Every structure is written in structure tokens, then in C-alpha cells.
Amino acid sequence: MTTADAWAMKPATALLVLADGSVIEGEGLGATGEAVGEVCFNTAITGYQEILTDPSYAGQIITFTFPHIGNVGANDEDVETVDMSSKTGIRGCVLSASVTDPSNYRSARHLDQWLKDRGLIGISGVDTRALTALIREKGMPHAVIAYSPDGKFDVEALKKKAAAWPGLEGMDLAKDVTAAEAHDWSETPWKWDEGYGAAGQSEFNVVALDFGVKRNILRLLTEAGCNVTVLPANATAEEILSHKPDGLFLSNGPGDPAATGEYATKAIKSVIDAGIPTFGICLGHQILALALGGKTVKMHQGHHGANHPVHDHTTGKVEITSMNHGFAVDTESLPESVEETHVSLFDGSNCGLKLKGKPVFSVQYHPEASPGPRDSNYLFKRFTDYMRDAKAA
Image (cartoon, rainbow, N blue to C red):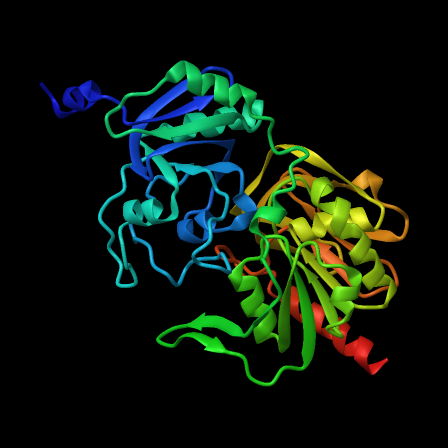
């Protein structure tokens, strides 16, 4: 008997059961149990730990197209959730190859143990190319990911659970991942042989509305000279303005922007009317569009990866960007007062906007590049330039 034959005879210890009844078998890792969510794929080659701790993925099962995930282990430095002890809402991950022992000096634990510690279910041994092709053709399916070391599953119950899940449309998930209360942020970006630093003198006071904010966004705001106060997603305009901000930042986050926008847009409108420079990223971009009179739509397969080309109409340049979103701003819905500033060169979807005549702008992608390229870091300077001009005026 060959090794391949022996492996084929082993019972599957994990399943990915799609809403259409398809059953994908594999080897389980991480936490045991089951979770239901939307299956997406991410094409990034590096940064799996940052991806797995990005709150924007709440409600989703992440399929990694890169085959070697976990080979550099995991640590406490590369976590993107602000509260490192909190759950991000991610439902699980799908891998091609089994996770090897880590080979990196920064590794603190094996990815399998790290997933267990965070309550995340994983499945490996999956043909992720075929699954990605299915998503590209049919859209992001609803599914249940399940791990049982003894290989025993109630498959019919899992099929029913996957089929019954309502999906992300209409879901306000920001409320599940936002800060419980206001807090200050002072950490600056990681540097070789130094780790993370602390803020010095700050030129600007910035309020960041937390819809599921990533740590590296806050670090770059701090590095740009901002004293950052993080407020919960449902903060009112009065609460925001009570901090006397020079600028308002609208963070990334998960779920349907229209659902979160039901309470967030009113506060954002009031702050903009007060003349406060405003900068949004990802979900913050979508909610800003809603506040300015636009609409958002669910995407077929979404954008998830670190190699997405975007054209910046304001500079004429093409940037390679990091993206993670399953909803998009409907360009045709934007009023005359709003200018489209960036578009995806993959599918022409909206990737940026600006309110004409006011220091208010946003982008769909992740300029903090964690993980990803740093082509778009200039946007943090654009934000501080707007605040500096506003203060001078």
C-alpha cells in the first residue's frame, strides 16, 4: 500500500459543507466544533496572521489561495485586532497544504495552537484552486466549516445549517467588533530590532470611529502626528465633537454598510457639516458614501488580496493595493457633489471618493498595508495636510 493509498483511507476530520449540498473533506486543525459563514478567497502570499485577525472578515470563512500557510508560525505582534484577547468574528479558514512546523525567529507558537487559542476552525488538504474557481463562477457560497477529531459528522444537519444561514446582506457586524468604550491610542509602527514605539508630540487630535479598526491603521495615524481617540461605532456627533477633533477617521469593518449606516451616517453628516476633515477606509468609505447620498451593493466575489491595481484619478498613478471587501459603493448613485477619485483596474468598481470643495475623502482599499504593499501610505499625509489647512484657516 502506498502512502497516498493509506492517506486516502483515513477518515476526514474536517468538512466544508456548502449551502448547495456539496461536501468538501479535509484534515482539521485549530478549534473543534462548527461555524457557519460566507466563503471568500484571499490571494495574498504573506500576512496570513494579519488576515486572520482582521475584524473586516467577521462572518466569513477565508480560503487562502497561497498553498503554504502557517510556515512562519504565529506571534502576538502581528495581530490586527485592537483588543488582542477578543474574537474577530472570523468563522474559519481553508488551506491547501497541511501546516508545517514554523521556521521563523519571530514565531511564538504553531498556527494550529494559535487557531485553537482563538477559537478558529481550520481545514487543510482542500483543492483551494477548485474552490476559488467555484467562487469566481457562482459567487461566495454560504457554508459550514466543521472539525471533529474522530471524523464523525451529521452531514445532513450541516447541509441544513448552511442552507438556512441568511448571509451578510442586512447584517450589522460592526457592533460585534467595535470598541466597548472610548480609549486612546499611542502605539507607532514596528521597526526592525526595535518593535513598536510610542507617540511623541502630536500635532492633531483625531477621533477614530471604530467599525472594526485594525491596529496598523491607528499606528500610521499616530506616526503621522495624530493624537488618536477611538470611539465605538455608535458614537453620536455630540460625543465626537466633545473631543474637539481636528479630524474624523472612519475605520474598516465587516458586514453590510447599509445596516451599520442606519446609525452611523447621521453622526458623520453632522461632523462634516461642522467642517471637520474626514478620512474613511473600507467600510468607513462605504458608510461615508451613504452619508453623502450614495448607495452600496453586494459584490459577486468581493476583493480580497494584496495585489489589486487601482487608478488614482487625482494623481494619474496606478497603485497596487491591499483589499478586503464584499460590498462596494455604487458609482452611479453618487450625487453631483461627490467626485469619484479611484477605480479598480480589475473590474472598474469604485475605490475612492471626495466631497467637492470640502476636506472629506475615502478609499475602498487598505493603505495601511497590513498585509500588503505600501503604495498608498501617502493618504495619511493627505489627511494631515487637510487638517493642517483647516486649522490655518
